[in-house]
Length: 355
Image 1 (cartoon, rainbow, N blue to C red):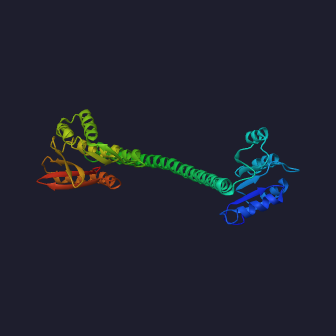
Image 2 (image 1 turned 180 degrees about the horizontal axis):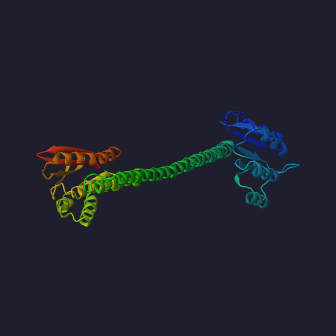
Image 3 (image 1 turned 90 degrees about the vertical axis):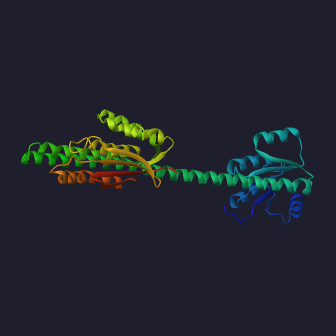
């Protein structure tokens, strides 16, 4: 079926040639094309070759009458708007037609062109176009939904593969760490307690690495500072670090402040630094300050080493142990800075604030 041009096409069907000629004269110059058929069979043949928007048919015709024609149109071309133009106004047939076929309008002969026929045809064409636009919009929506579902499935498959990759990374890391421990045990250590200390450090690194993997793929969200402080306080109390009272005092000060980041990872990094100060080479109570600077919530932890001949060695060990933690921060939206001020090591962890 070919559409002759961009205009809508209205098909008129009547066995009286005089009626068709009168319609052609009355509707000359309308915005839609008019085509004419003198029988139901001819009308169906035209509809096979052209895209018809509206059909206007007489009811009483020899051979195929109007009702049979409209039934055929309804079955083959359900979108076509159907109008009856007839001089036969027997109420039983009108009701039968309306009940069996979705008739748009029933016009009686003789018709009033300007007051009745033209307005009805215009509304019928508009109704047809509205149906087609709605159908196209529905088809477009269904296609977009199918594409969306396909894309979503691909994302889910990729995410599933990412999780597999993460688990493989963790497994390989565990194998490497295990091998390192075995090698150290085989060769031993010269100083008393050195072997245990090395293995302990490896365990700490593995725990930190596992914490990062567990947070993958990283998802960032808004969380209240109060939640972070309460979480740190609870964990530090379990580790018998009573100085967390310094942070608890800041809980109300930042009551309405919210940060943006991966809560689990932020909590793990800060708690790791604070727990690290429990090591014997540090003075037991570090100074902890919580401030807001340049759109960031800053945890500033000042740590003092116990002075001795091996102070430089211990300081070097601290920087080495913090190196992996800094690398984790680089992989997120956190900033971690380490500096020395007045014989103290100052660790600053910056978390973006949600504006």
